[in-house]
Amino acid sequence: MIAVRQVTQQNQGKKTAGVDGEIALKPSERQPMVRQLRVNDGKKVKPTRRVWIPKPGRDEKRPLGIPTIYDRALQGLVKIALEPEWEAVFEANSYGFRPGRGCHDAIDAIFASINNKEKWVLDADIAKCFDRIDHSALLEKLNNSSPIRRKIREWLKAGVMDRHTYQPTYAGTPQGGVISPLLANIALHGMETEVRKIVPAHIIGQRELGVVRYADDFVVMHKNRKVIEQAKEVISKWLEGIGLELKPEKKRIAHTCEGEEPGFDFLGFNVRQYKVGKYKDGKKGKKFKTLIKPSNKAIKTHKEKLKAVVDSHKAAPQAALINRLNPISAHLCRNATGRSNIPTVGKYCITWNGNGSKKDSSGKHSKTERIRSSAIC
Image (tube, rainbow, N blue to C red; front, side):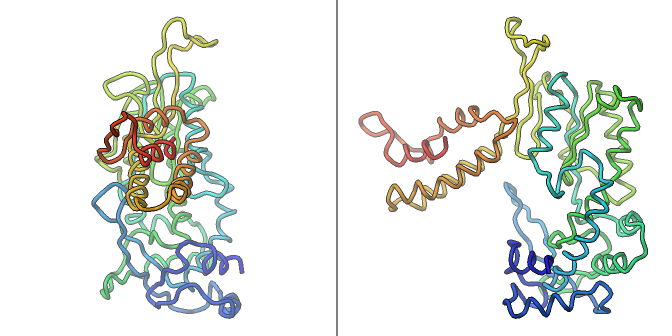
């Protein structure tokens, strides 16, 4: 019943149909579906419907595989059964698509790792993680021969319908599936353990190495650059075993405080350490200060959203425009809480004056520009 409720009432994609054309069910149709849900129901799994959506900030698109509403409900049921088992064994520094964890927990873990010492960082991303996971390696990790494993294998091998053309699937998990994030975490389970074999097993050696993963994004932190380079080779070799590889254009080694481009961007935040003067050393005598703030890319995206709203409300009353802008600004403030430096966001946004705006004859910004500035900050 919980699985049917999540798929037909709570999920944002409840009105997105699969190949059968069915969307969110009426109240009278939900109870019959609850009685029909069986893992070993003997029904043939239908292929997923391929939908292409644009990637944020890029020209390319990524594919979504939308299962039928019955398969989505059944996947939700299987997820409810599998998730507690795997949550008990998942690695400590895995934060993506897990109950009770989120982006801010990952940022807090990064802050705890670098706050007291300057470190080298490997900032990397796994290329097409959901599309290339090896089915055999994933099913082997499930480590059971129950009807659940057989049903998961059927979902993986169901194929996709892309513009009325059937295509078989030999690798990957459909990104539109309810159970796909859990399967991706299962496939990537063990990467942190493999990386930690590089450093000594005692507590001091393990504490100096920081590994934080959020889905297919991860960072590795250590004071020694050679350890970071070795970690990069170990991860690349380990990923080959599950059919994955690191994304070539996002495979960067940087220092948190020194170099031409110190720091790194992770989950929409910029993480960097700044040198301080000799009279500003803290109680521990640190020569740097760690600041975590929204990245330039995240701020630019936020400005573009505000600009689009303002441009589409040129004839609207001031109160209506402010009511429309407030939720967008509140979203940025909620995401920027925690370890991030919120005054820095205000400094960047206060200087923004929209799309080539000009001051009026009195030297002041127009009413629309004042609304823009007040809404951003």
